[in-house]
Length: 110
Length: 191
Image 1 (tube, chains in turn orange, cyan):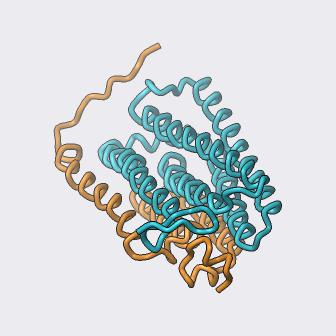
Image 2: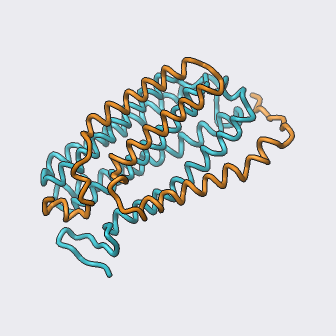
Image 3: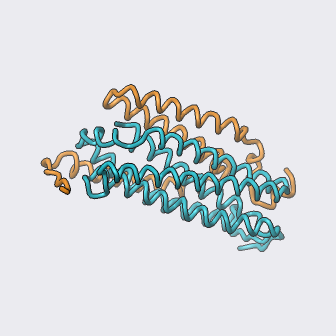
């Protein structure tokens, strides 16, 4: 581990990351796969598959570009706290939005 | 206990304070953008016709912008790598490429807005388009803010100052990229 690396406070594993260019290639490939899935136009399955690919791409960026994979666990907990709030937001709103009576949408004219 | 190190940054934990502060900030950003995305998903669940509205977005522009942001994420992380190897000039050049990527993204976004408004799809057309302009507009503002921060860090880097901030702006820029990774499929592809 070099002095310069220690100076920036990285965990010891951060210098052994995969090739950034390789990760970029995988991300672009994921984009192409998403485009292909998007043209399949299967109502529910398309959305699920596209979101799955997006989550995988986000993981690659967060883990290897943002180096969250090499951060101490409490940093992961900090980010997970935000996601936990979204979890409660989603399931807290489901009864109101999904099971409430339909609302007539007002469309702007002119 | 905080420690002033030779590189000019402090740490009270095993993580440099600046980087930890950036993670805290991004955790709040997760709630902001995530809240918009979660409510959009819920409304999309009960409004399947939003798929028709989404078909009026320009997929090619969105896909191109995705590649632009992914590439700018690559250049900013390579800038961080260059700083770690003491190659400040190369790092500053890579930050410049990142700024160019951000500028291209904004130009394409402006063209999309122009085209969609010209077609009659404005923020008040319906709730889908309110979400579209709201989420992409907020994202674009974050791109602008990130570009300002990267520019300031780049200029300091040219003077050999605050090299450690390259990583911090890089983390922010990657987050902007992650948000777009979710916005693109939700607003463009799922149509």
